[in-house]
Length: 82
Image 1 (cartoon, rainbow, N blue to C red):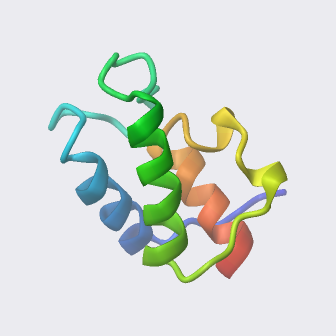
Image 2: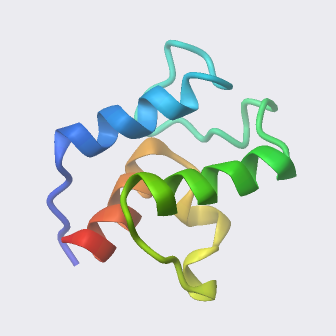
Image 3: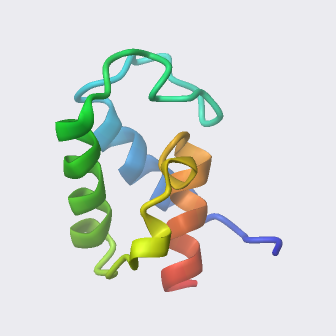
């Protein structure tokens, strides 16, 4: 599926990730490989996505690959709000 990602969604995601990840994080950088993301932050990230974008994620959505990069998170959001 070809998903059109809204730039403002990426900005909101980057702003949240900026609290834990390097400022020079690119949209395709693996946030788990930075070593700064632990299981607690992963849970906070899920809650952020649900609250910020007013969506409810299903168990199937809680795959690590859906949260690995800014692009992956934005695509997940677009699938739910798109």
